[in-house]
Length: 487
Image 1 (cartoon, one colour):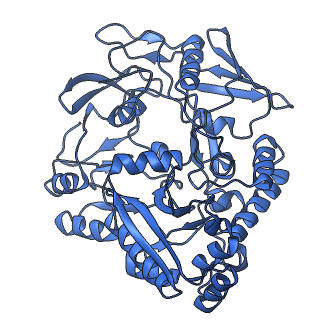
Image 2: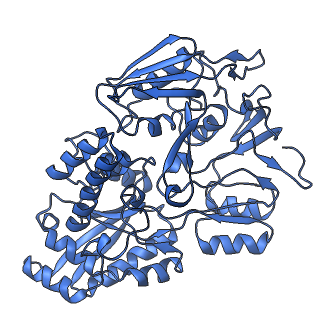
Image 3: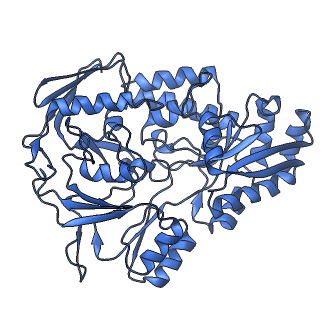
């Protein structure tokens, strides 16, 4: 059922078609291709005071929320304030912005946010928060290019919002169905009854299979900016608290062999912290630190120096892990065995593993995924700051490093881009040196669509790690050609 306070799963996808944020993120070209740039959406303009504490947004004129069988209603600043307050009250970890922020609507078209301290990534956070009208609706409602027409079982039918501020959408409507796994989506796409699937394709092999069935289909790939999957260790365990052990495990891995065998070469090894916030081009060599190379002899020497020539531990992972992810871990296990390490994989029920990964409560090691918004603070603060006992957070790796905590806090409030980048570089180098996690190869994110569908499902540069915002989805400018009609 739809819960307007806690949209989740398929309803989150629906909400992003019928509601809109204050602003959106677009990406530039050349050196700025991976830099999220805020663009106007519901907010026509915005400004920030020099101290970074007061942000003022001016809403567009004539923005209407689609009515449910009634006249469209104007979107007001009060709607925006209520939506932002609801986002804080949902209790996400970390919250989208400082809970102590003072929100106000001085008039019907003006929204102000007064922060207790500067937030260099506030605009990125706001781009992920859809705005809903104050009136409580039984189904998602908002100012987006589409409106919910009806719900039939697992299918939601959307109709075009003719009064959308960008103009009426080119599509008459959209049907969205939830509960289809990757296999069902693949079969439906091959049969021509599914245009876009959020699980398609999962690998280059899957893409090749779909293209054999639908040669006219278009497959697109996104760049690899950060690793989504990694092995995390119980850093409270004395064995893994010793950085010589972690470095040895990293030196045991032949990463080029892993990329070829597990992913057919269509993957890259990059750290879990997104490199575009630190470098102008993909890092390599010395920029990746001293422990990314393959050197089994040095790995064995480090283990011996740590007093652990024979090391054994279990690596927990979810039963829902994909084939390539599981195979890559098997390759890693074999490489560790060559230096005298007995790492054993342990499949766990999806719900049980998710709880342990969320709470960082696993023993030994765990193979999990992390998502992050396309902001420096998501990667260089939220995923790194020490977790308080019993508190939720995005630091799944139990990293507890006082120096990282200090730098992470400082970069979050640093408004000078050059000074901030210097802090991010320090964090990067320390993470690469301490090897708090073993980052796995990241396949290139893929999407597939029929050739007749345009302007739908494009992947953002941060598609691998930014699940909620990965796909641009439909918009007023989505259109189709050919014999498929207008919806």
